[in-house]
Length: 472
Ligand code: URP
Ligand code: ZN
Ligand code: ZN
Ligand code: ZN
Image (cartoon, rainbow, N blue to C red; front, side, top):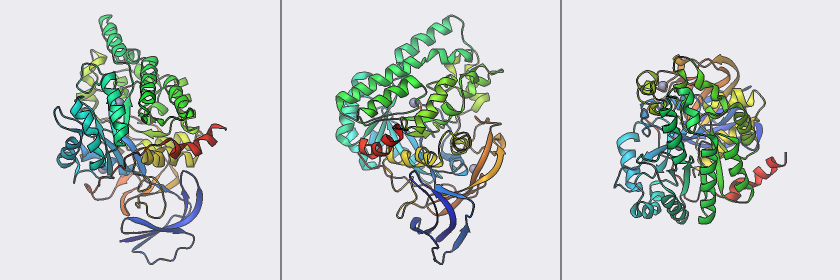
């Protein structure tokens, strides 16, 4: 099977130019002007942008009460060809076996996009920490640790976090951190509920900015002591982002990700009528507009380097899921669907609004996520030898995000009613057509694991370009 894409405006994280792309056997074989291959299929991409398939390093398909992989084709409809999913570690099972079992039982033959796995430490013990050395053998080079949620099985205290950092470093495994001070969150939540402040509008007050900034800073210092890399996921605010920026500028391999909803929404969503605010409950919370503005600047200037969706379409959606917290915000299951909308929102509200360049869009939505997950350059770029994960993007399209177009399996759409400029006209996964004009047209269940290489993150891999951005 071969494919020739003619005359597109190719966008990568570092370049923009007009050329043809020739694909054979799932890989990009040639890029250049006036390519003269006899292909099974030829596409004229004149007037279109051509960029790498989106890499969403942060999705939940079976963790945190989320809907499984049956709806994973939604990613493709939105131009995302690779997702990074989290594997919960059952008690007494090693991280490595957790990955093997999870892949066999839930993912293999079901996932439509290609996928990367991140472990989640849920059973902190000497065996688990020792076992970090085995996870690269199953293609995993990142493991998430939750500093928040004391009292839940996935809570990990500082002792085990520090051990994980030290042992992860030895194994080439990067620790991803959910940074919120667990005690502050628990005490604030309890107090608010006792005071009768049970409405969803009090939810953000239970998880203050400084609880996130403090935990971020603690994790960064611990990483410094362990001389280990650290990936801070879902950074929501200026204070936490500044901690990361400073560590990064000091030469530490500390990186931050923010998520679509922290860029698109502000904390006014929690005051919507009819309990609608619950739709946007995720942890850490969506913040005031001043933080939203700072996050846009942070991604533009390279202080945060990736934008994930933190897609988490919870079981029961709004009606049967979120409404469990109608009388008590602390019972609202966290998470919102978003994997299908990430690229559309980042293009419309980032590129089209002039907040980020087209190249920055590719960098934070495709290239850097592939780098931090250790699957670059197989994923996240358009270069000879890369997987032929390609989006042909029509910048002229104008529309609106509608629930009826959502394929994510939830009963609501996080970005319902938002304007959309441009859309993926064709989405190819390893050379196979998977989506056209927002509709899934491919074969389900063909996703393969992209094996993450150990020691994926390194300061030097990112720094050169970022320092230029910094001087802007
Ligand atoms: O609210 C969220 N983010 N749900 C998913 C779990 C997590 O912490 O990423
Ligand atoms: Zn988290
Ligand atoms: Zn998450
Ligand atoms: Zn679908």
